[in-house]
Image (cartoon, rainbow, N blue to C red; front, side, top):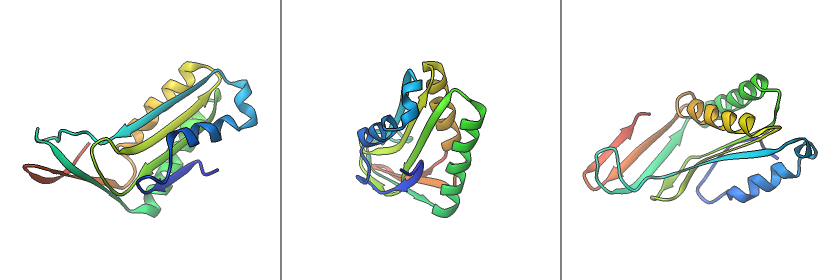
Length: 143
């Protein structure tokens, strides 16, 4: 199972990631699975209705950055058993999934903290950009 992946719209289902992690033999050492599922907002930064959002990336470098984020988070927390990071790069509609983060930890705090730290890193480090198209126009969204 891939631990980090750049995917297209509809290529992955959140439940599939959870089931894959639950098949890890070490999951029985754990007491928590924490998840983050990012979705496209229906209201843009300009306050108008979002028609679509487009994510693009320098995929090779984005994959490398996501892999490094995963490795750093795992090395910082020895009570974390596994961590998955999947990011969508595609044209998306409001409500579509954008990023999937799933952490398995020995304790809930380990998993929850890993997910929180991971999403903050994912929003700033990889070369992944988004452009929002609203009723008022289009523009790059800076996090």
